[in-house]
Amino acid sequence: MLADKALELIRELKRTVDGTLPPYNEDGVRQVLEEMKALFEHNQRDVSATVAGESGLFSGVQLRHSALERNKRCLLAYLYNRLVQIRKMRWEFGSVLPADIKYNLCEQEIQWFGRYNKMLASYMRSIGDAGGLDLTQDLKPPKTLYVEVRCQVDHGEFETQDGNVIVLKKNSQHFLLRSECEHLIRQGILEHIVH
Image (cartoon, rainbow, N blue to C red; front, top):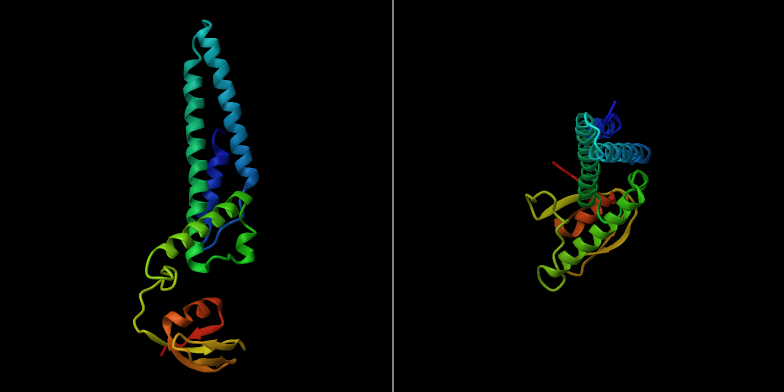
């Protein structure tokens, strides 16, 4: 049936769990594009025949044109929703995606992610004071400036903004500024202790 492959791409996205990204369905996208090409060529032949004097082909042309439009909308929705997920992941994981997620992206999506990283970094450098402003630092507004953290791995020395040096050993606990240790918490080096 017409536009079934395109609809399957949308269903594939709908089945995924939030925060995950299925592998790019290159075969499905290729099949949709081939179907669109075949529909377009068939419409061109029928329109040429109609101009030459044949009649009764207009309904078929309209049906194929509607299928073309539906395929286009489904394909654009599939690609757009993948890019929205990739953009969300940039804010969650930072400038480097985990290997299992990167494996699910196509080459063009990887290139888009790289360009998005550069634009975001450039923008963050341009705002704020001398060093810019890291917009990815506090994804949720902090309730306190200081947090209690436990070190998950031996990380070594860590210098705070005021010049103090703290040795981060496994299972050691520290009371640090949230802004200083947020990136270490996201990397899994430190664990935020919630009482």
